[in-house]
Structure formats: C-alpha cells, structure tokens
Length: 413
Picture (cartoon, rainbow, N blue to C red):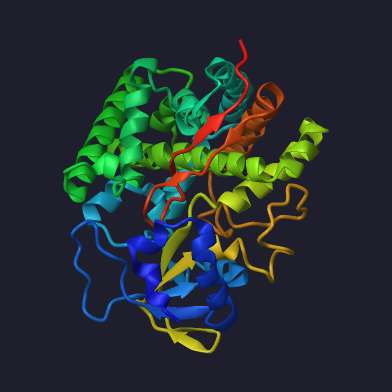
C-alpha cells in the first residue's frame, strides 16, 4: 500500500471520494500504520526517525480521545508541526493537558452561561433568515460568499462582541490560518510569514477589545471572559487572545464548511431534500447530525503517547505521535451502516465530527447544531430549488474546507 500518500499535500487536495479507497484499505488491513512526517509547509524540519501512527477506525479514535493520560495533547494537536510560538498563540486549551487544560477550559466554559448561550441562539434564526433573504435576489453565485460564511461570522461576532466595522477583517484574517496553501490566499508570500502576520493581527485585535471591555463592560462573551474567575484566577489578555484565535477559526470555519458540503450533498441526493421538505422542523435535528458526519469539517487531530501502549498488536512507544483520522472514522463500515451513503434519517448517529469525546470534545457543538438547523431551514424554505456545483477545496489535511462553490436558484425578491 502506498500509505505515505497520507503525508502529502497532493493527497489532501483531492475530494474525499478519491481519498476514501486508501482509508478503506487501511481500516481493513492496517488499522494502525506508521508514516513519514507530513509534508512541511511552515519551515519546521522533521527530526530524523520522526513520523506518526495513523489511526483510522472509529472505535480507536474514540478510545484515544477518551484517554488523555495515555494520549496527551500538550505536545501538539495538528497533523503537521508548527513553530511552538504559533501553537501557543492560536490553540488555547486545545493543545493543553490537565491541570492547565482543566483550568483554562473551566474559565472559558464559565463564560458560556445559559444566559449567554440563549442570547446568541435567539438571534441565530433571525440572522439565518437575513442571510438567505439577502442572497435570494442574486439567483446564484459563490455559495460560500453568499451563504455559508455569513451566518458563522454573524454568530461568533455577536457572541464575542466584535464591532460591525471589524467583522469582515477578522474573519478574513482567520481564514488565512486554515487556507495557507490556497494559491489565491498565499500569492507570492512565504506561508510562515503570512501565518505570523495573521496571528499578530488577531492577537492585537483581541487584546484591544479585552482591554476596552475591562473598562467598558458589554453584554457579550468578551466581557464575560475578562470578568470570569475560577478560584480567584482570571484569564490573561494573552490567554484571551489565543482563545479568540481558536474561536475565530473553530467557530467560523467548521460550521461554514459543513454548510457547503451538506448543500452539495442535498443537491446530489434530491430524495433527501424532498424528505426534509415534508417536515423541516421535525426532521432537521436528525439531518444535521448526518450533515456533520458527512462533511467531517475537522479531518485530523494528533495526540502523543505518554507511555508504551499496544494497539491492534502494535506497540506505540512513549513519545510517538498518533494521528486520528476523523474523516476515516466517520466512514467506518463497522460503526455506520451503509457508511458511504448520505442518509438524513440515520439514527442513532454517533459521529466524531465534533471529536471522539473526552475532555477535548468541541465546546461549541450545540451552537454549531443550532446554526446548521437554522440556515438549512431557511435555505430549504426560501430557496428550495438551490443547486450547488462541485466544491473547490482548500488543500491540506486539517480543515475540510470549501474555498468556492458555485450555486444557482430561482431569484426571489
């Protein structure tokens, strides 16, 4: 098997249908396999003998996710390596272990009070309708710009308290972090230079907003973050800025790309669309779970073994990297009946689109579900004949990102 394809940018530039045969073969014959380091794009040279174990089965992904003592996050969570200072500035508690992870996630979680979540959720449906109504007269165009990117931008901006004038700049800067290899984004720049510039911009914005909210509190998450305390401890501005970067990427990109992939799936599966239209309110919650499984917006995360451990008769040594391939786990035939079929009636649907459980399960899963329910209810109600073309993907093995996707529909005033 040419398994080292997994480490190339070329492999991850293909649609999932082209990648899946290799994953299916690995699931059958090599559920854990050793690979050379992924292709370097940030100028972090591989250490001789370095590499990673690929974990491709659903049950193994869940096992590793729920055992942070054996498989830690504090030594990095991205598929490829990045400069340490970039990781500290962008990943917040995502790349931490207890007790620091417990402290920081606890502080951030304390800001997600029921009142804060209700305030955001109450506005999501109104924003979803606004997005679709404003797209309706166009009759088509780039679905990403017209629809998919707009609701997550509104939601996270409302939530954090980003002023209207700064919203587009913030989301465009966050886009750079996951689309570095897109030629239209990179241009003639060096990836690490562009990445550093984006991080600097987001950190500066978040630090300024945090300082402003300390003096002028508002009804938003940034105010809650600067005020939150656990055992007398508050988040520093640097910690708030790192969380802001994480939220800008995770909160915007995952929902945005799931929206695009799901719209394409509804286009190529008209029976599924017809089924939903018969009872949108009743059937949408179940369908949303399939949208996330099908899209798998975050395709990989890495852990590091803290001790020697055996998986499928293979010894993973302490200090070795283990990469979980969610995109494979969500197509695992042993976990999902007819796994390669887009099935909006699939129930139960215990996908790993928000992670495999454990302490790093996605903090914003409920908000993402609310956004997806809202935007597709409005799309299927107001633009029931919308057809999405073939998506143009961002290259890379982290975010299953849709850069552009043409669509068409009957214009409506």
